[in-house]
Length: 91
Image 1 (tube, one colour):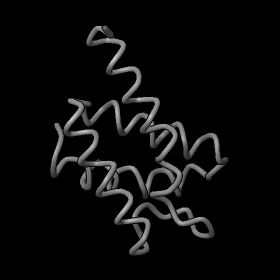
Image 2: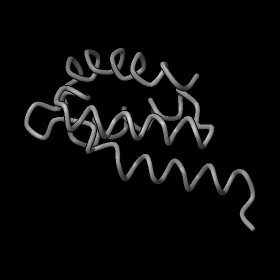
Image 3: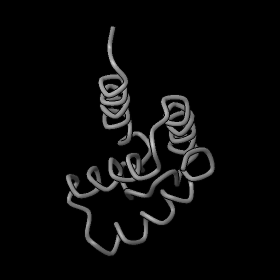
């Protein structure tokens, strides 16, 4: 049986696998299109159900954008929106 830290690690891995689907493939905007928003809502509910923190999920989003090579200005624009979106269900 997995302990709570293993379960949290598995949940974070799942978020890492799915976060890309929450961004526009051409514009890199978080939940800017209906399908991206729908995936983001599902991921937000998953994060809430698994007890992930806002900082953990925001960190995954930040890492994703940095790995994609998005410019600092774009990341700085997106992060407040990402935190606002996830804050509706997690803290």
